[in-house]
Image 1 (cartoon, rainbow, N blue to C red):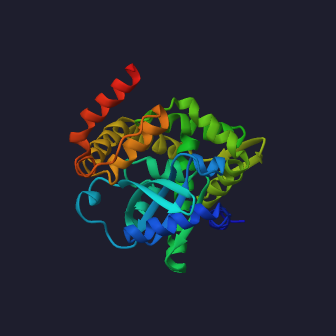
Image 2 (image 1 turned 90 degrees about the vertical axis):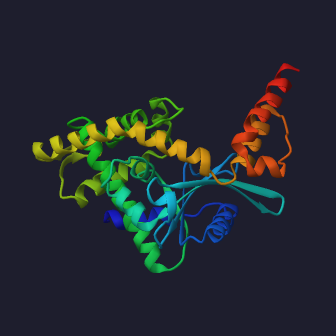
Image 3 (image 1 turned 30 degrees about the vertical axis):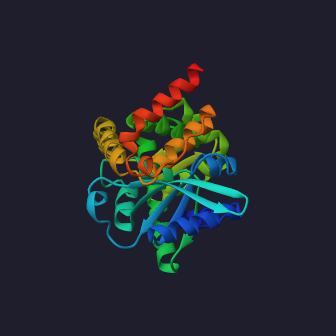
Length: 297
C-alpha cells in the first residue's frame, strides 16, 4: 500500500453523522470547497466541547488571511436537540498545500495532519484528490523531521514522540509537551502504519521491522533537516504570537465563543447582547468583572 492510498482510506473512515452535517453547514456558510476534521473530538468520538474543522477554499484568500493564516472563527450548528460547536480554521488550498509540504516556517498544519483526520466534505473528486495529496505531504514532512529529531533506530513511536515533544515546544501551547503522549496512545496503529510508508515515499530505505526500524538515510539529509528544524523552532513562537494578535481582532464569533466557555467552566450564564457581539474586545472587561463578582459570591 502506498502512502496516498493509506491516507485516502484514513480520510474516508466514518464519523458521527452530526459532525458531518455540521461540517457541511459550516462549509456552506464560509463558501468553502472541503472540510477536514481532526483533534480531540475525533480521538474521543464524541460531540462534547468543540470540534475542530479546517475549511479549505479553492480560490485564493483575500485580506489579512492571505498574509497571516488561517482565519479562525467559532460556529454553532443546531441539529434538532443537539448543538454542534466548532472551532473553524479557514485557508486556501494553495496555503494548505505549501504548509503541508513544509515549505514555510509554519509547523501547525503538518504537525496536526500527520495525526488522524477525516475528510467530511469535498466539492468534487478533484478537490478530494488535492486534499488527500496535501495530507499525505503533511505526513511525509512530519516523517522527515521525526527522522532528524528522533533516535537512530527503534519503533515508530519513538520518532513520533520526539517529533511531537519538539513541535509542542516550538508553538505557543497551553498544554505541556508531554500532552503528545496522549495523542500517540490514542491511535498507535495509525502512527506505526504511516511512518514507514512516509519514509518509503521519499526514497528512504528501511531495515529491521516495526519493533526496531533502521532507516538508511545519508547524513547530509539528516543535517539539512536538523538545520531546517532549528529555524522553525526559533521562529515558531513569534509566528504563533502574530496569529494570536490577528485572531484577537478577527476571530469570527468571538463573543459567542467566550460566553460559552465562561458558562461551561464557571456556570455563569451571560446574555449575548448585540453590543457584546459587535465589540467583543471592548466588552471583555465588563464580562470579566461579572465573572469575578460571581466567583466572589
